Every structure is written in C-alpha cells, then in structure tokens.
Length: 427
Image (cartoon, rainbow, N blue to C red; front, top):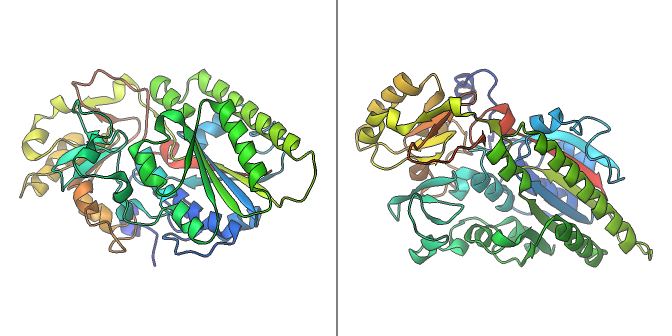
C-alpha cells in the first residue's frame, strides 16, 4: 500500500512546505512502532517508523508516550536547551537513545493528530477527524470537535452527544489501547483533570481507564507509581502535557517564556527520574522502560499584520452553503451545489497569494489526508469539503466578529507547525 502522497501534488505545493511523511516518518507511524517495541503484532493501520529509528530504541517491557502539545521541532532546536546533541533533556540523567524529527499529519492540529496517535495510526481520512472544526453531514452543521458542540453556538461542551454524536461511537476504527489490550498489554492514560473525561478523551481512550492529574508534579508522581506497579510485565502509558500549546497560542512561539517552560519541563523530567530511582532502590529485576517524547504539531508566529478577515471576501459567503470548517490556517470551504469551480477560481484570484488553494477532492486523492479508498470514513470527504485554503507563511483567515487574537497558530504545512521532535530515553 502506498502511504506517500502523490509526487505531482507535492510538486504543486510551494517550496519549503512539509507534507506528511506517512510511510515511516510521521506521528502516524508511532503506534505500530510502539507495538514493535513491545513485541505486539496487531492490524496497525499505518506502518511503523523506519527501521533505523526503531533499531535505535530496540525492545522494551514498558513504553511511556509523552505527548507535549504544541512543541515544534524547529522551535525546540532554537531554544538554548534545544534538540541538539548534549542538550535537551539534560537533567534526567538517562541514556538518550534517539533524537530525531517526525512530521505531523494534515491538518497539523490537535483534534486530528492526537486522534491519529490514539486510533492505532489510522489517518484522518480513516478516522473522520479532519480538523478542529468540520461539517458533520448527518447533523447538517459545522461542529467543534474539541468542545463537542456546534461551532459558533452557545451550546455547552458535549452537546453533540445529545444530538446523537456519541463519543464512544464516533471512531470507526480500533483505538491504540484496544489494539494493545487485545494482545494482552495493559494501557494507562494520564490527562489533565479538565479533559480527562471530555467527550474527545472518551472517544480516544474508549474502553480504557483514564487518570486525571492536578498539575505536572502530580503527573510525574502518578507516572512513577505506574512504572513501579507495572514492572515485570509488558505495558503502555500515554501522558498528555498541554502547557506549551496554550502559551504559544496566547503569546506566540517565540516568547522568552517558552524557554522557561522548557526548563520547567526539564526539571519535571528530573523529578520523574528521582522518583524512579527511589522506587527502584529496593532492587529486583523489572525489565526495561523507554520514554518517547513527541508532539502533535508545532506553531507558526501569526502576528496581527498577517490576518485576513472573512468580511473582506463577501463573495465567499455567497459561494458557500455553510460557514467554513477547519481553522484559521487550514480552512475547509463547503461550496453551494454547482459552484465548486467558481469557488476555486474566486479563491485563487483573491486569496492565492496568502493561501495554497486546492480542490479538496484532488488533495484527498493525492494522499494528503491518508490513503485514498483505503477504509475511508464514510463521511470524511464531505467533512473535508470542496475547497482547501492552506496558509502560506504566517497568514491566517479569521472571523472578523471574533475578538480573539492568537499570536501562534497551526494547521497548515509550514515546517514550524509540521515538524515535531522524537526523543527516546532509556529509563
């Protein structure tokens, strides 16, 4: 099966853009790689990481996947504690098995990317989770898939469930946890308390007990306790760390505070290492534990000067049957019947300098969202829509009625948002 996007489509993209490396160099390849490290053979939807990466890690009895939301590889490399040899992480005192980079998926955004990771490596075209917001054809409106409600409405978080969009039924493929547990590998998940039982978490961790944590210290304490209790058996833990994403959205990824956050994460990993040493002081053989640190996406600095507003393009509302889906750097447009060609022409003429304008179906057939025709989610193509606007440079398209101004965003194919780190540590 060909997991590589169509070369002709890639050639049409601007120089410097990064497309998803789905054949062995993306976050979609991590679930099968974790399976290989743990010795689990399962019907993983995507192939594992390329062999050199897997060989660097080897086999292990326990794997911890630490997902640090919003940490791009390029931003990490620019930090004084960056991704170069001998730097981050510097305090844990453990052997660094691997420092590398992966690509995110398209769209490079949390709802899509974490679902790929937690759905066994099933790609957005298979999961149906193709953006921060997207059309839900059965309900007939654009929904927010983080908040699980109608986008732009006053409905409460989770209100989609009242309309029949049930989290446990929304994912048509096995979860990573289900695949591992089916092979006899227990799974634990550690999420911040506010999202531990959110609708999206219930979907992604279907059938798995999730532990909420109060703050990062509580996370390291709980992970160390899990590692101690799991010694002597194969097991897997997923931990989600959200702080960098919120900071980068608010202040932009170049804020000096970002480097202080990194220093704090480094100290937290050192605390984790100390807790492991204390737990192991009694001796005994417990096998090998490996920690994999990665991210779902990075951030692009998006100053106010780079904003475009929908009110500047009134023809869009006339040509579209619904409000846009996606987000400000990855816009899904839903054309009125018979108006796709006209919408494409309008976007090329008015927005082509700021956005890569693509026929959505051509992008799907070109493999940007996954392998076309392979176990596609029945609604995925409708959810993606008719025309795509993928931001060039720092550009973004913003609803003018929204007073929020985010100085860091993601979703498109810029290297800063598409490239993420992969650091493997021997614990």
